[in-house]
Image (cartoon, rainbow, N blue to C red; front, side, top):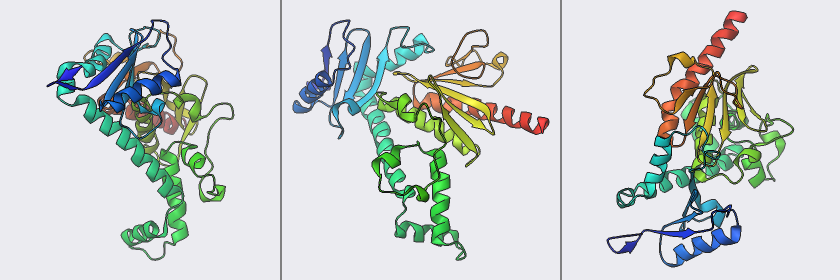
Length: 308
């Protein structure tokens, strides 16, 4: 497609049965776009559409920004309006307005900053420790105490295993031991997912962890990730290629019909815990979902107080 005679994205169509996961094919289409100075490329089989940012400094598969599928099996939980909104990102008007450019910058930059903070906070350099102690204004707080506090705060909100995998030289004593199940890990859920989905998951994780820093436990199951306070689960999420399916313990009868991303699943089989399901496919949806997660957390907290 061209806008003002300038190519803005390259589309390569494959056979309907092509799973679109061949690394060689992905590298090839991304390479074609990069060589021609085209920022965006789309790989599709007519049902699934994968959007890559050709100029992103990463391996070809990791240039995947987002993915849309019109197959009901791949887009369970998403409304027709949500699927249309995702596909509209590829419209001429959206491209002319820089919608993809803005989204790509936001998602990829956030991911880079998050990884940088992982490195800094897991083994904080002395200048950072000094800066924090100065901001605290209490000389009785030692550098070691600051480092331990950073570990507690950051490890509670960051993804388990990311920094450790990138920095195996960091000793286990310098950070709290990640709390996760023996059978599954975060990688089980994030591997192969588009960058936008991973950042949505990171954002949800931060939201849950910030409700009670240092007290929230994250567990990895076969089909979902759950967050709990003192063993009381208040949020679950399943990572799909096109977004998140999130379950919370709020009252399904109180749902606002205008909030199309939320639905009552009390009489429908689902993987997570909770009778309200949220279909989160963008940062805007994630912000709208915050009140549901907080309400679910508050309900579980009140139950614990009453039972205690």
